[in-house]
Each structure stands twice: as C-alpha cells, then as structure tokens.
Image 1 (cartoon, rainbow, N blue to C red):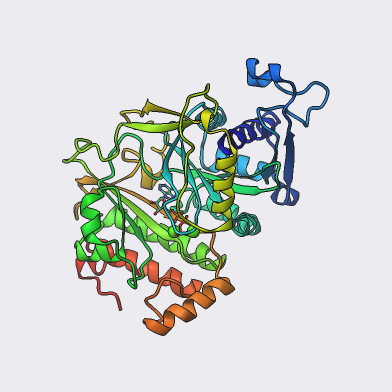
Image 2: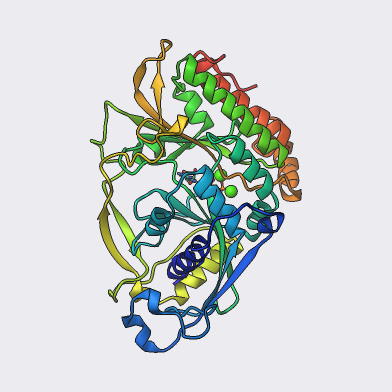
Length: 423
Ligand code: ATP
Ligand code: CA
Ligand code: CA
C-alpha cells in the first residue's frame, strides 16, 4: 500500500509540475509545498486506466486505490535540478519510477531503519528518511542547489525529489528519490562504505566470505590492501571534486556521510552473477496473488515501526512476486559525467593514464545528518572508550578533512596508497 501510494503520488505530483512551462526559480520555490489528497471514489475505478481516475469536478482530489495524502516539497527546485543539472529526461524519470514494478532488493541495510527500493530499471533509489532529515534537506536546499549548479560533476548524492505520504491513521513517511550509484548491467564484486574512521569500521571477514555482496568498511579496505588505481589525470580530477564536495559538506555542517565505492573487475566480468541478472521485484499494482504477509525485521526507529505497521495493515495478497530482466548494456545516460563515463563508473588507469581492468562506482552518500546534540552525545560516549579522533562521530570540519585525507591516501600514488596508516 505504501509503495502504491508513493508511486501514485510521484506520478501525479511530478507530472503536474512537469506539465507547466519551465521558469526561473524564485525564493518562494525553495519553501513551496504542494499537497494532494487521494480518495477512493467508487469501486468501478479499478477497471479504468489511472489517468481517468480523477474524481470529476475536483482536480485536487485524484482518486486512487487507497485514501492517502501526498506532499511534494519544492517541486520546482527539484524539477530544475533534474532537468538542468542532472540531465534527466522528464518522461524517462516518470516512467522508470512509476512503472508497475519496483525492485525491493536492499530492504533496510543501515542502522537507521530507512528502507530502500529500486526503480525497475535499477537507475533510481527511493529511500525513506526521518522527518528530521527531510527538514534538514529543505533547510540546505539552496546551498545544495547552488553547489550542483556550479559543480556538475559532484560526487554527492543526486536528489531528484523529496516527498511525503500520509496514511489515513496519521503516519507520515518522508522519502527521497536519488541516483543508484551502481549499474544494472555490471556485477559489483566488492562494495565499501568508507568514512575515514577506523574505530569499529570493519565488517567481519569470516562473514564476508559467505556474503559476496556485503558492504565492507574502512578496515577491510586497509587490511585487504586495496587502492584506488587512478592515473595522474583522473586522480587530479577526483581529488579536486572531492575537495569541493567536502567544502559543501563542512559548510552545511553534516557528518556521518560516506564514500561508497563499488568495484567491478572486468576480468571477472559478470560470471559470478553476484548481482543476479534477474532480480525479485515487488509490484504494488498487481492482481491478487496468495502470499504470506511480508515481515520486516530490525530497527526500532519510529519510521521502521511505522513502516512495519503500514505493511501489516496493508493487504498482503496484493504483494506479488515476479522476476524481471535488467539491461545488459550501459544505458549511456551518464556518459557526459567525468566520474560516471565508463560503463556508468570510473575506469581505473595506470600512471600513463592508460585504462586498466577495474571500474569504480563512487559517490558520497547519506549526507543528511547534521552534527546535532545526539551526535555530540554519541561522540562523548564513544570517546570515553576510544581515541576521540578516530571514532566516526566527530564534528563536521574534522569529519570532512579526515575523509578527504583518507581518500587522497588510498589513491595509488596519491600520497599513501596501501601504506595508509590511520593516525
Ligand atoms: P546509516 O545511517 O545506519 O548509515 P542509512 O539507512 O542512512 O544507514 P545509507 O548509509 O544511506 O543508509 O545507505 C546504506 C547502504 O545502502 C550503503 O552502504 C550502500 O550499500 C547502499 N546505498 C545507499 N545509497 C546508495 C546509492 N545512492 N547507490 C547505491 N547504493 C546505495
Ligand atoms: Ca550511512
Ligand atoms: Ca543515515
């Protein structure tokens, strides 16, 4: 139900904004919120195509399969971001996101209790976020917009939209739509979530052996002797972009973000089928199929509890299970971006800038955690038992500098390489 509501809301909200002539942004656009109220009207509706489902006379009350409210935040700003700076084709965007199928592959990978869903073509990720994160994103939207405008090659998460679904019992679920850093057509053989911190930053190697798709951390990177093999040209470009990006992150006073690194080894190719070519999909709009209710284990955060409840209260028989085929080739839509130009990623190069057989998929993710009281406390408690400068929650200036230094150090020839020693 939640997925259906999210997708229906996006479809209506985005296409309404898109239907208007584009225009220059105003200050008001950064504060704008558009509300939609969806109502179940009559039961004959399920037979009609969706675009005919608006209840007659009241444009603002589109009818749908469920009653819910939908809020679209700063629609004009996100539209400009998508079209002007992220070069997304509007029709493509809507189609990818609101197609019948959604891959529900990642589930809830982090500690935060956020849920992740892929669009059916694997290009976009929907991530549910806390209310505080949504508020924070809105509060920095101007800075973010300005940064993206002057840094078309930024490595920071591309936010395509911020929305909220409100269920009839009052639960509110905020979510963002962002780019999937990983490609649909290449296996990722190793994934690292790097913070430049060493305390507790290790995924147990014994477990990793059994789970090829595990997200590894800083200490795994160091202990496995990994380097980012980039020749002088790419190294200089990446260093400069990361420097600029970390300036923004310090300016907006965030921490806890990470550099996500996916590694594809071209010699290994797609043989291992780590990223199986046919993935399970979740289709919110399917005819009834008998299945047990989906259970979501894990986090006790209010958002996760709300989601579990929403799932419980939904009609599990409507959740279908199917498989879909992902594209075999690069879709080519990222070729104009320096760091995403080689099969959607960045190909390793040697000291003569000649290509090597590794492709990196890089990006800075999870940037919506301001250095708040909570983090200050965590810093205090963790700091009692470990070195205050190595633990992950440090203040934003130090956090940014530390991750940037780590990045420079792990680039082969970039001032450290495999000899990186965390101080
Ligand atoms: P926590 O706050 O506990 O770190 P979270 O719920 O905020 O977790 P993220 O850190 O944003 O989640 O992401 C968790 C994992 O999901 C990442 O380590 C990565 O494997 C995957 N992931 C997140 N964003 C992306 C993205 N844009 N592209 C590909 N994978 C992603
Ligand atoms: Ca994270
Ligand atoms: Ca987070």
